Length: 180
Image (cartoon, rainbow, N blue to C red; front, top):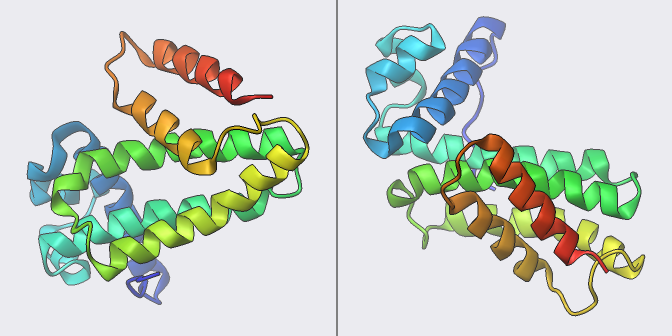
């Protein structure tokens, strides 16, 4: 996966991580047209710190996206020892956050780029074993594929809901439909 090198000094790492968190939040609300000044302000740093870490707007979009995929990959490792359905469901619920971030910055991502293709491959490589294990254990429908389930969850995240509780109910119902 293409990854920007995180700063080595502790304060620089904190600023970098704060900028990524702030960018995720601000992009989720305002999309790709969000002000970089607002992102820096939300992160509690100056605009110069943002530009030092992300010289171009595109660098920030890509770092946010790569960060989401890295989190999904780490989570797959963390939950792998749990019971099959619990592991898969935990990962899929985290996938919801990834899908929301991707949707917010999709227009800024080059879906044909090596970075995007590598991230997609890494994400599938992380989640597929969880799905395969759950399917082998008989807790996921035999006629479902990993791609089917990801598309279902992605579709749910793109819908409009009255509130977060409604989105959670719809996701819970959909995941129940994926069970064997």
